[in-house]
Image (cartoon, rainbow, N blue to C red; front, top):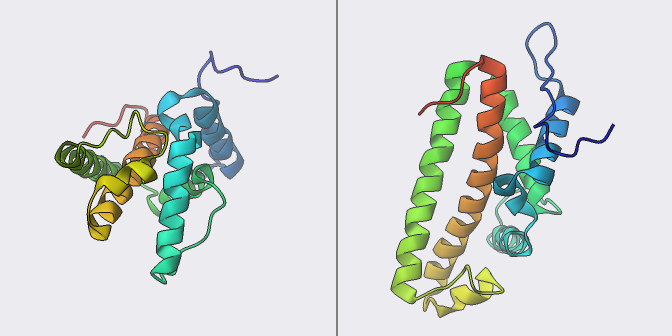
Length: 174
């Protein structure tokens, strides 16, 4: 039966050792991408454009990064990797706290730069085009990177917060 989103995310399944079943995690991520506005932002054309810009920037700078086709693919793999690496409550709590800090830093930087350069990213058809109002290449890079991080962290926090609650029986509290 197809979940229409009204009943919430599907259950997160674990084996006897407490390890997350990868296919149930994929179902959870898919549900959030389909039904949760804070996670589904990863499918917005402006966020996809930012992601493609970030990938191209990494390639241009010869960074050794895995090439993903889409922003939502990067989100899903990042969540799976984070959960594989942070296997106990304290470690996952610390990771989510780091995401909150990164989101806060990115949002503050974006707000400062938007005010300084009179950027209207919400109104613009393209955040990348809007960033051309910033006079330096380094300034544009900082702004666009923070825009990408703000979208990524928002989506990841939404999903990771729910996973944390499923795993540990209580909401995440900073």
